[in-house]
Length: 283
Image 1: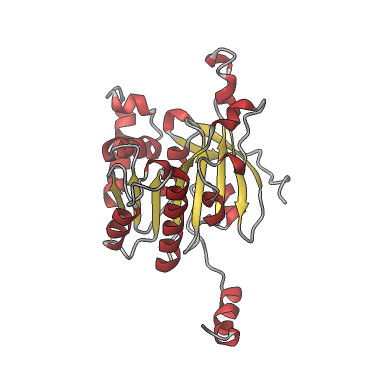
Image 2: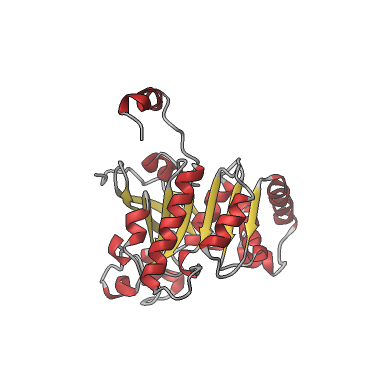
């Protein structure tokens, strides 16, 4: 235990020279959060098809340092294909079906070259446990960022624990790793079905699936919401603008919360900043 005066010089230095967070992949989210900072546990949550993995991909492509991506849902091949489509601005289906033209092939080659030169490491072990995560991450102690997609596909080392207790403990272990190693961990999470029963379907913190520990242990919680996804159930897909999306900063320890207008480009598996974003609703 330290007397407070022993840490005062570090505090003064941190005020004079604030830590610059890693880019999130969206300038508007960078502005709202200051980026992802060392030691933070950041949760990106949403219902299925809201774009969680797309946002993680945007984040990966924005990095210049060493990034570990634990992909429990997709194989490393599919994830890499998505990153190529995103980086090259190519329709994902066009890419995987090999229906590209000469101009697109040129962009694809450039994207592949950039990814080959990057410092991205992918692990697609299914049903990853906290113990396995710790061992694998320890092999890359110099990592600048860790991404996990997603929490609800992880399994606890103690298989006898109930779902809530297991999720609570997994979150605590991930937060402990982030703090101990001073590295940000971005964790994708599912939401429960409560959003389906609301007229607007807009997500809330209370919709985090399975455990209050997710909210408690996280420093930042971003909720993804695409109104047009729900409109497509009621009217023809062709008449719907598929681009509108919101990134809701539902929790930010020592920071502001609010909604960020964004654009979702499903064909490219990517989000983009919206020119209409003013951050006028922040609190």
